[in-house]
Amino acid sequence: MQTWNQVYDPFGNAWLSTLAASLPVIALLGMIASGRVKAHIAAVLSLVLALAVAIVLFGMPTDLAWRAAVLGMVTGFFPIGWIILNVIFLYRLTVEKGWFGVLQQSVAGITADRRIQLLLVAFAFGAFFEGAGGFGTPVAVTGAILIGLGFSPLAASGLSLIANTAPVAYGALGAPIQGLASVTNYDPYVLGAMIGRQLPFFSLIVPFWLIWVFAGFRGMIKIWPPILVCGASFAAAQFLISNYVNPWIVDIGASLVSMAALVLFLKVWQPAEIWTSPALRGNDPSLGYVNGGRPVAVGAGVPEEFPRSAPIQRTATSSEIAWSWVPWIILSIVVAIWGTGWFKGIVNPIFTWKYEVPGLHNMIMKVPPVEAKPKAEAAIFNFTYMSYTGTGVLIAAILSGFIMRFSPKRLVTAYVETIWVLRYSLITIAAMLALGVLTRYAGVDATLGLAFAGTGILYPFFGTLLGWLGVALTGSDTASNVLFGGLQRITSEQLGLSGILMASANSSGGVMGKMIDAQSIVVASTATGYFGQEGKILRFVFWHSIALACLVGLLVMLQAYVPPFTEMVIHPPAVAPAAH
Image (cartoon, rainbow, N blue to C red; front, side, top):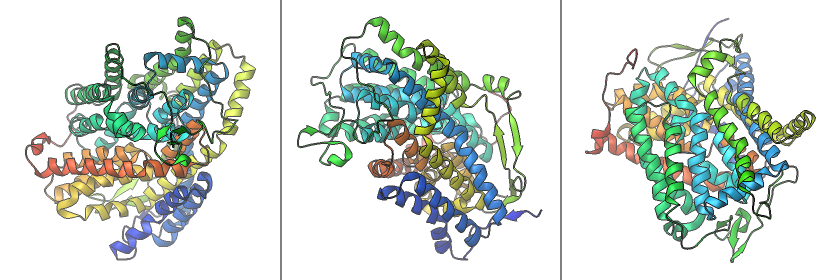
């Protein structure tokens, strides 16, 4: 079978080609934002449109397009859907036994203030799960915990997404940086260090931003000391570990430092006014805000089939509190083990099914200017089922289920119930990943990237936004880095800019796109039981995503052109050394 070369300007007009390439994502986000089309239907319709664009407008052979879409569907369930399914299974088990209610009470024992709970759970605890597992794990876990703590579904969803930004570049034990290194041939240690000279600014900003969104400016200012402790400790650890240790353990180390610093600080400081309302403050009751001083009913929109856990009425004993944390401690330990290279090295050679997709593998060529020379696109599905983070989560859930004294029969029936509850979310995730994989193989994403690359002196700003776009489209900082990393290096070198700077900016800018990618929004709505309300979540986080991405772009512009920021840019040999 003859190979097919990607076409990046099918109309011979960059504006028309870019418009055509953007149609699927515009349709997807538009339908979700409207609130009139259910997420799973919007995802399927957008996939159909993407197939039409790829085949009719970009000339992709039909059989290649269908194979790419099917590969994307499978990729959507493994590993993304697999993680969500098993995290929600664990959550439902802890709710059924009442352990989650005790957990709520124990978190309140650290602080009853909802703002500080948000720092502890959404930012610091979420960063740990991002570092250990990534791929939707932190939003699923923190969203479920926040909804159990009494936060409204919109607050739990949107705030978990905003919090899950600064740690993303080092997620899943540095997977995005490894992906970036693989396509740029830059040393991953150098890329990790350069990103560590960009994101700590935002690790300091995001906690303030998060509480400002939740509590308003006055509510944020009243607790600025713990916010500063949380953000500064995370930022400092993020910089030091990324620049002087390695890029693989940055999130895990920084999150543990941040949690410890915050808990210790709360031993000597508590806010003068304890805010116990779990609802956002504002004027729109449809968003779960407080209106006219009256809290909107917490949990509105959560179906009965998605159980909520109320705190137990009596004071839990120290023993009950300790046991309530056991499932989550087990989860943390298992996820951390599952993310390590040595564990993958042991199980992957034994428990891996490597499938080269016939009729697609190496049948599509990426060509200049996206690649310096023509390069075949591999299409391999590595079914590493034992080392998937979701498999570790399932094992943790089963172990926790037995500890909570569930019978084997009840565990099975509870799992089937969880699948039924998440059926539409799993369909949505599969369709969205099918769209993302299809557009990558069709070269549609590269057409959008080339539009950003033509911005000349403003390229440091728009190149950063290219990373943001990549994550918004693919749902993954790793995928965005693989997709646009080579383009960033080629373009920056042509413009006389640092390739290290712009490759790193792709990842740093990309993290701000994480909160608006459709996949993450579905994960958040699934974790919080906010089914059918994905449009509200998207509208809630959209402008925050753009604003933060633009701020990253401005920082990169300063690092590119303005002393002393230019001194922050690393200029080492490009090729990675054999060992460290």
